[in-house]
Length: 431
Image (cartoon, rainbow, N blue to C red):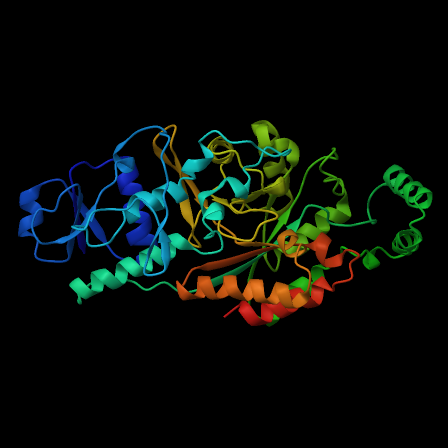
């Protein structure tokens, strides 16, 4: 049991202490604001204030955990034994920066509350993040800080007890378009045929006609392949199905199609099925609830996990809607076209709502690799090198390695065989 003394216990303080010590490091903690309790405690203890009490393990505090609302904070990055860090402290501190305030800044997505220009889909750009600007986006920096802190604590307290974490790999399959040609209905199929014909896309015409006679030949129908390879290598997987009506950005098979419903039921026998929320549900809570209820009625199970279309997240509004829709887990925290850790961590965390100064009851599972970020790499060797680098970073801190692949890319027309690439990744990085 580690005792933490501070001058003031706030929601931000308890939030980040539990994330760093309890969830990442596996150390039980208690808090106190009483000097006498701290002095008489005979076990491991640290002080988190402006000044140390005695010669204890001391981390000099920044003000961010004791404030409310948003301030225009200047972030200046230095290094701690080669690890980028910010919110530097004085020489009296046992470590050279305020690890807790810096971690809160990244996990709360503090910078996404600050004024910034959103892209066409209303998303925060990775290039506006401090992690991108200071070249540590591809490092689970919060977990690295925690690991380094643990080393320092164990030097001072060799008998410090903790529950060690285990590395975990989860493969996310995004099914926003379950089939390329099959089960599309008469009018959509004819319109697609005429469009391909008018555009002289004769290969697609051949594929389309072939699938009309045998729907199993649909290029996006990779489900048997995915289930078999997940079972072979004992990989934890989640399939996120879109269950929305046709719209400008949502062009999946109709949720009323019986073949589509049967597909989802069959997948649910082997893997967890979750909701890939539609583009339109981003700001429409009623629509989000409707899609969730529709999917639950098909699999006859509660749907607790969700991913937002195009990884659209408007903090904190998106997560408030997810909580109101009774989701418990989100897998949207990452960038579509940029490899890296959007929140600076490879450990699940609860969303802290800065506007309300409260921890929202939804667990965020951050991913670092999205298949459309890999598409931008020129060669298979470059893809392998990048994935392996991220894998090693996560493995080093015993974190959660989460990848996002879509059945659409795996079965789409490309010079690169994505199914072979995915199979290689599954076989290599699931341990």
